[in-house]
Length: 332
Image 1 (tube, helix red, strand yellow):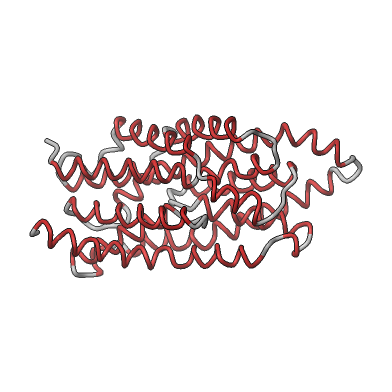
Image 2 (cartoon, helix red, strand yellow):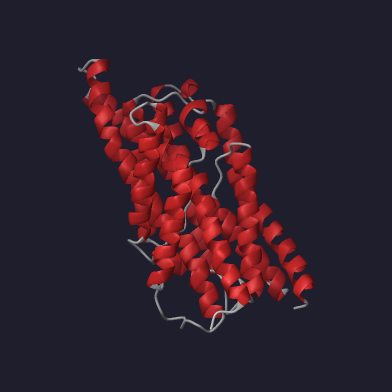
């Protein structure tokens, strides 16, 4: 039977999923909106629909969150603390228009809250954190940058005989396809984090066997929450990624989205909860650098990278602090 605390966990997880949706809308549509290939309304509708479809396509990342990072069961208030830490960080970075990783905010919050709860570092499966979080954290943006750079270089070489107007005409259509692929990939990876955290709560409360898969009702609720969040849209971050960091043509948007989506799909196959924000940001930088290094506003890019680096440590601290507060309030 569902306890009050477990219901709060589900509500908090769906809230995080909703915020993740509007916070990370920019991941899939910023370049399409900035190049005027799609109107904001159409871009958001497409992203929301494909986020929903993508969210139902895989369980690998959800299983990493629910079974691969923490040893044994957790009290519900600990999971609530992890979710609150991620939500606070997401809202803070959204307010200032900074693209950050909702995924790593949640993982950082979960690690910090779990350590505070158990008063030991042994509660964490550090091999899982290294293999599924730290290594992908470092490699996925790097691969995204390389993919964006080389796809753009290849397109320049293949299309050098055609006029700019011809290229813009073709890629105004092709970029819709790449934006759709990116939206689908975002749903495949990102929506699974909330699925995993709810499943972790169900396992910890004894309502679900640890060998079971992700319940279908959890998948559907998280897919809907992600799609609804995406439909709201995170315009401040869209401006940062699609306009402020680099001025893109449709061909550049196509290269960035295609490169990023391929990286996200690859990481999802390995069950790695990567940051779609990191990957698409790096891919956009790679596209800009393929033309000339000065095309990228590196001061802004540096601020984004700093946010990437500090997200996990700060949310670990925040998750631990909220755990201590909740523990005192409920007398656990």
